Length: 229
Image 1 (cartoon, rainbow, N blue to C red):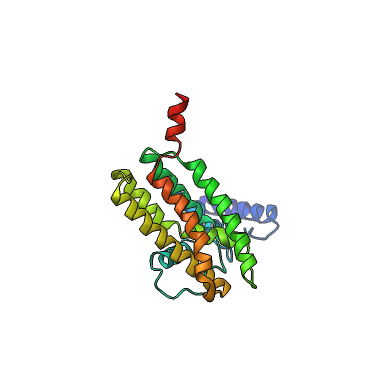
Image 2 (tube, helix red, strand yellow):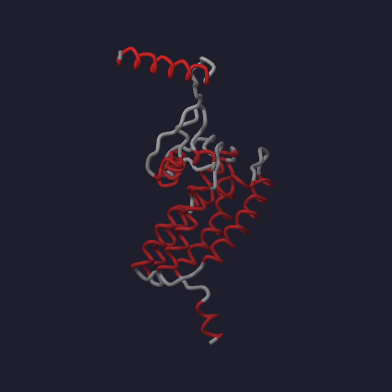
């Protein structure tokens, strides 16, 4: 008797549940991304076909590494399509690291670094478009000049532990100017197909990197600050 009553109650509850839901089992679509570490905020694991967030922001570490290796090994053949996917993530990082290293060596030169970079990029952009038939946009000019600043960042790192206002500093600065200029001019002539005009391209580029080298050797604002006191 008790078992029969329990069976009736169970059947009644299941029937009421079916009536309330319309006899159809509810289904929920969509995929919910599983919780993980803080690095999951930079991915799109829950959305198919969506690129990573860093790639949407223009930050591609594999491209940054490839272009950095091209600068560090300027004797290798430069692909003329290397700047088809130009970006500013690497250049801004190198400019910031250069400024921070000079700051650690007692040379706060952020204003001069970004000022020289802006004026130099506009000047070289104008010269390259006057010299070449193909032409280049300012975005790629800034990208090339920023990536080729990498050897100068190494000089800034040396300035943290060694005073560059001497023979060693002058030699390192000259070497970094030659390195940066050779790498940048090689990329420019490869992209613009101006192999016969490489020396003409290298001259203004060397002047720009020479300004950065002066910032790494001398404290530009030190004399003016002393006069103010």
